[in-house]
Length: 371
Image (cartoon, rainbow, N blue to C red; front, side, top):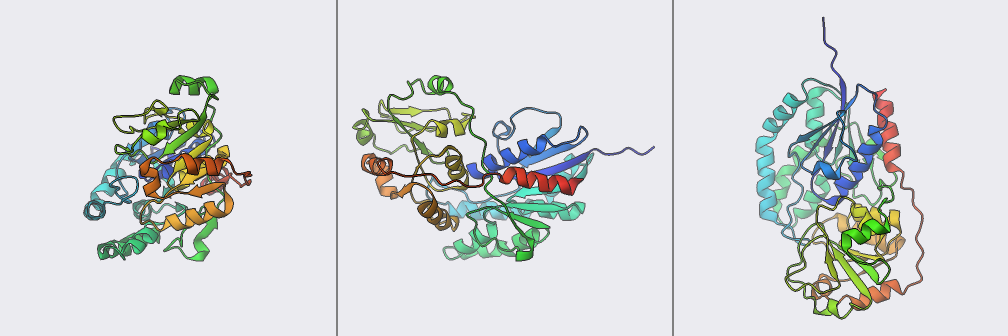
């Protein structure tokens, strides 16, 4: 008597960056509600599951496996090129082992579909399984490495393999603020609206317990820089702003933090809640933080993020579509933030309304494929 394998949908999530994890978390929680009782979600990622799932479920399986390198950062602004290249070499040499390890763990399932944000290796697995596979994102690693090859030609040696793997994708769901989306042909592209998280359910009381501060006493400024410390940030200038502004960060700000600087545990699960109760967000442009600010209607004071082809696209989009202002890394790291904050908050800005239904529309498309 043959045993019928339960059906499963595999989702690859790049563990590099808030944007990938936050948007795919929203997609996963929408997909979860559409699952039939015998269907499973298999999530392959290095990200902490706490940031992906709203609830534990026997229908969701997490496989902790590195499958994507991305870019290794020295800090919030600079790429560690040598380490990135070495990691890419490691991934190339170990791809077969990684594939075999995943195949062992999914052997008891019938894989109906694979979705990847934005790992190329996912499509190699799809080719082996003969399963339909779909890409979702606002850039590809081909775009990123091609641009960085001007700095270090070693990036070029990885592009042919990455392109080959991407070619196995049936469709590419391109998000707003996207790059050229190499190597996908136009006939494979499907435009999606923004994938943005739902509005945070954090209450004022919860915010006050988390920050140990009274809400509304001062303007709240969130410093959001992807989990990197600002150990050398001078706080003397921030102290001068203590009568007006409360600064929030999820990382340490040096040994002499001012009284108006609050450090939140970096494992704070409702990061959107910190954005919800901020008057302004200071950050480097990234897909995740921008969509969070769109959802919660928050102005953005942004700075450079180093050589990254996505940056100019995000910067131009902010300049044209969202209340925002640029400051240099030098001004940020000097701590002289009073004037740019005042200039941005003093503007009579309005927030444009954008379609943020990308997760629902992507999920509906995938469920049609599964039916």
